[in-house]
Length: 221
Length: 274
Image 1 (cartoon, rainbow over the protein chains, first blue to last red):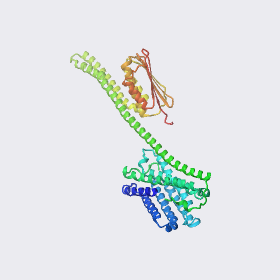
Image 2 (cartoon, one colour; image 1 turned 90 degrees about the horizontal axis):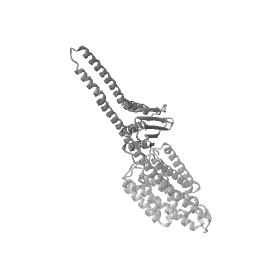
Image 3 (tube, helix red, strand yellow; image 1 turned 90 degrees about the vertical axis):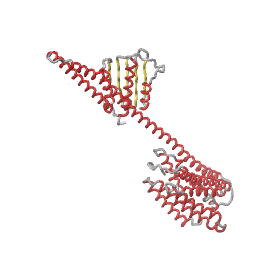
Image 4 (cartoon, rainbow over the protein chains, first blue to last red; image 1 turned 30 degrees about the horizontal axis):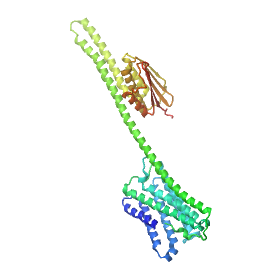
């Protein structure tokens, strides 16, 4: 319930910030939050029989939207960096092809595409770290706390790092046999989820509380 | 999202293992690493911002000081110009006027002598005017280098006939640093001005050394000196110290009562190759 609450909080903040969101591509994350809230609530309140049959399908569909949203978002963030402008579509294509192979091939649509999602997590972590590296090296005065993308990247790193480990260990029998470990890991995931949505929420707040300046330290991007 | 994903992966019996603990530790470590990196970026960026702002402030102060220095050099030139016009050329022309006014028609021999004297006076006035034009030109000399500027200053000092001046220039080809040289020239002017006002000296030694990355200017006199241990830093010395600090240089004062004073200015002065 707590995760649902922060999801809603982030989404509603996004709606409030929608008009003042500059650059406009920040709205991609608001739209993603909207879809997440919709999917999550649908999953939460659907009938148990439906839930059991279709939960994985929903997760897979959501992850596809999420993957696309984050890649498109970072494509805009690095719009002035020629190398990254080329690298991001290639990475996105690789992740989507991998996902297609996994979902339509060896894993099936009724199980979560953990392998390709892990690959995607690595890509998004790389893009977020690359962005923070750009922030670090900007040659002019630059306040990350006033920059929504900084908060988004921070949230993305935390969430995807923990989720990457989660998806890596989930198939290890030793781990899945130990309920206590699972409970602890669920707690860890909950923390990561809450941190993720609160950081997105903070980023969106900056758009209407502080007004918009430069999106990215462009001279370095 | 995906918070209940683990339910859909196989897992039956419940047993504790070291591996599970390690995995949990890995998850926690990842979370902490992520947070640590973000905090690091945040703090490092803040520090960098402070550095950039400090640099901008220092640059602004340097530029302000540069304008002040340029103004002071111009002011100094104007003062000299006024003094020269009044004390030398003015006197010569007054004398010429008196000489010519006293010419009486009919006394040819005396008239010829007076005209000759007036011609000489006019000639001297022309010479003085030429010197004066060099003084105005001296302002431009600053742009041509510190050596030329110092030499020009020495020429003017020598004209007073009160000082014995020795200038040792040990720099052969000095790299051009117009802003630094302007500051140093102004410091030199202030040092000379202080010396003339307070030292009571009749001998001045000036030395300029450059060893590729350090330029040293020494101004010494045989005047009355002062006790450096006492706080005797007047406005002149403070102003010199401020300008030298702006060039990341140092100023040393060596003096003792009755033993003259030496001011040593050392500033980083790289060759263009460095």
